[in-house]
Image 1 (cartoon, rainbow, N blue to C red):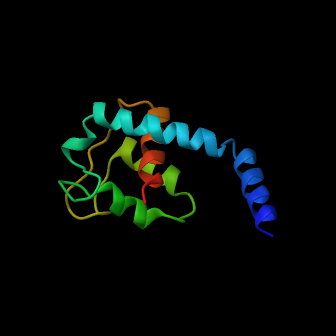
Image 2 (cartoon, rainbow, N blue to C red):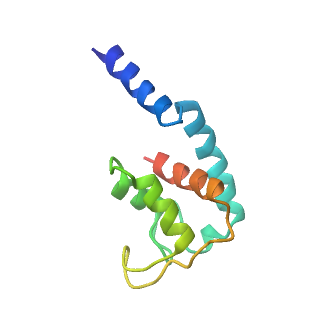
Length: 110
């Protein structure tokens, strides 16, 4: 049974254009990109700075369908009200692929 579930999960990832290896690669790249992009000025892994901590974000969005796309759009477009009144400024200058790698890093945290 476990083997069948793993096979189905892998098939779903491949159909979506992602593999566990690719997700892990993006997550590792995302951590490095975040350290260079100024994200740490407002966020930390385990505590609120200006914005929420990455672990809090990962916990809130774990298992939420479409979370990755939603977070990518929120980072690029900016917005307010999700975590309180302080707005998230838009980050349109960061390539979507890089933002996606950063989001994958955050969502990989436990």
